[in-house]
Every structure is written in structure tokens, then in C-alpha cells.
Amino acid sequence: MSFVEQSSKAQDRTLAVWFSAIEQGTIKLPRFQRMEAWDRSRIASLLTTIIQNLPVGITLVLEVAGQEKFVSRYINTSQPKSSAPVTQHLLDGQQRLTAFWRAMYNNYEDETYFLYVPEFDETDDSFGDDDIRVYCQPRWERKDGRRYPVWADDPEDSLKRGLIPISLLRPGDVAKEVDAWILSATKSFEPSDDAPDALKKYKEYSAVKERLKERIISVRERVAHFNLPYLSLPFTTPKHIALQVFINMNTNSKPLSIYDIIVAEGEGAVDQSLHSLQGKLNDLHPEIGRYQDLRVVQSGGSPAPSLHLRV
Image 1 (cartoon, one colour):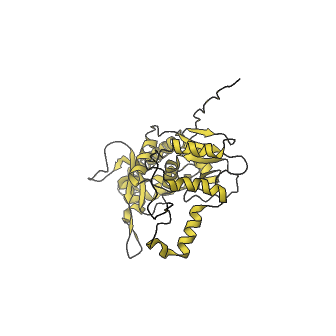
Image 2: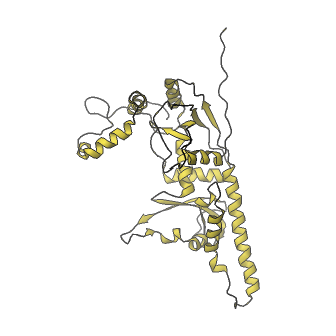
Image 3: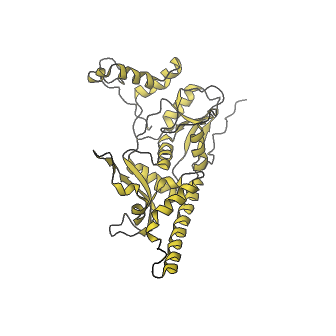
């Protein structure tokens, strides 16, 4: 008697759990996944959606038990210190999780992300309306080696603009980091012992620190418990089926190219990362790039056409 197996159901998983999995290296990306593609606007939009506790869609993973079906890599900038076994491959959702991971460490070279809290904004040129949201500040480096604007690295100047580093919302034990930033950001409020009405001003100073800490803790809790659900393919899923599901479900706006398909299939056959081999070839012979894009897979030298799929 034939039967139809029940479709996968979405399973709940908080961002704190996702973060821990990336941190420990138990979840990785198949090498055929594209690298980061989101611009700062989309990253800020995602982070704002999270702090406002709105849904951001479902991710897709392939369960791993024993040998991995695909050559894999860690989420960009994550460097797991443990040798924990890989339990899942992330097939869809890498842009969201990579953006979240990197923002929680604020380790982008050309931008810094802040939580904008209007109640602490003392400037005339407000960064936005009365809603808490995420603000992205572009960064650049000058010949003196300093990163500009300088205020973006100064807690006191940032707070005067109503801005709190997004990294303070990072899941895990960052209490000392939060306390140290609050102390630096509010130092101008602390009165001297011989100041007029010193006791009154000290109470006001303490109230500002307490209100700021409560606000950070509140948003930290919201981020840690934010639900990013996922669908999972069992580890028994054949490799070609997993690849087809990836093609069908991946939601990147760019179409999947034939090159991507060949990478996905070829890596399993040679048991090596084709991206790494391509990189090594480019390092050995950089002049090749002046004559031909190494990603071109068609004969005749024309770029590979794209498959009209939503990837």
C-alpha cells in the first residue's frame, strides 16, 4: 500500500539558540551557497524587524549525522573554538543569520550598527521618529589611520545621539560589557562631590544609568527570545533532493546560475571546495582575470546564463 509522508512542519528556534549554534560551529553553510549579498539597508531592516518582534520568515536546514553531504564552511567571521560535530547545514536563511551574527559583533568594516532610542537623543537633527529602530552609520578610514566618524566609537557622543551599539544586544553573558559602556556613556552626568546640589544631581545621574540599563536589558531579552522558525530535511535525504529543495526554496533575489549548480554538484564529486580551488588559481595567476572570468562555465567565453529561479 502506498502512502504519502507528512510534510515537514516548522519548528521554533530562538535567535539565542541560532547564535549559539553558529558560535559552536554545529551549523555550517554548504560551499555552494553564495557569499554575503545584503546591503546595509536590508541588514538594518532585518535588525529593526527583530527588535520590533515582527516575523522574518522561515529558514531551511539539512540535518547532518556523521559525514557531511556537502563541502561546507562556517558563517562569515565566525571562528568556533570547539570541535563540536556539525549537526545541520543551512540551506536557506544564510543572509539573515550572517547579518545577525556580524551585527551582534559590529564587525563590518564600512558600517557600524546602533539601536536608536529616541528618549536619549539630545540633538536637533533626530535620526528618526519616536520608534526604537536600528540605525546604520557608514564608516571610512582616513590617511591618519583613524576610523570616521570618530563619535561612532565614543560611548558618550553616541548616547547624545540616542544611539546604543547593537553589539550590546548580543546573546550570552555580556553584562560587564554593558555596564562598562553605560559607565562611559553617562560620565558627563556624574556630578563632582563639591557641585551645587550634588546629592540631587547624583540621584538624577543614577536614574539615567538605571533607565538606560533597563532599556538595553529589555531589548536584549526581546532579541534573545525572538523566534526564527525553520524547516528541516532529515539526514537521510538524498543529496540531489536536498539540492533541488535548495533551488526551490532559497529566497535570495538573484537568480541561481549554472555555475552555482555545477559548484553544488562538482564539490561532492571531487570532495574539495571549488571556490577554494578557484581562489588558489587566481592567487597563482591573477593576470587570468584580465582575459576571462574564472566563473564562466560555458565554452566560447560568454557568461553563464542564469536559471530563472528565486534563489
